[in-house]
Image 1 (cartoon, rainbow, N blue to C red):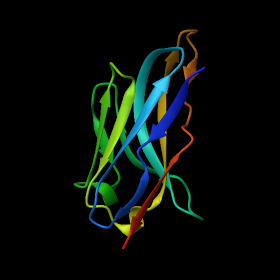
Image 2 (cartoon, helix red, strand yellow):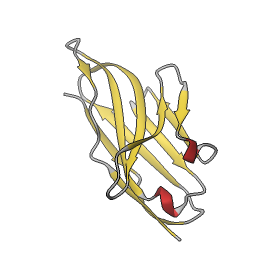
Image 3 (tube, rainbow, N blue to C red):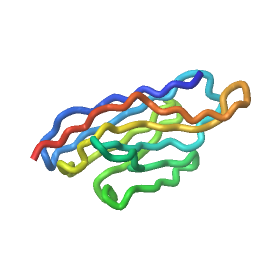
Image 4 (tube, one colour):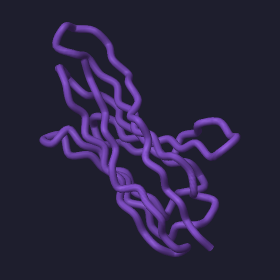
Length: 120
């Protein structure tokens, strides 16, 4: 079973920075794409940023130039560096990863989420 555990959320003032981490563990044979999504109260979960196995990145327009996604495959970890945070960035941030496990089965689990709150 593949599990994702996020960390790094918290309370920060507008203009500040946070770095989220998400470690993937379990019986992964390969990790393909990794990504971050967020969900504000009463709203749908939406894409923040993704990174492919080859390092290609994709960002939501609202975070371009402020957030940076990266991955360390040796540590099975994906990061989200969040700079110049705005109150509208406040949400629960979820990590996602997909790949093939040791049994040759596709996996695509979600983490439990980490709260990010930006005060004005």
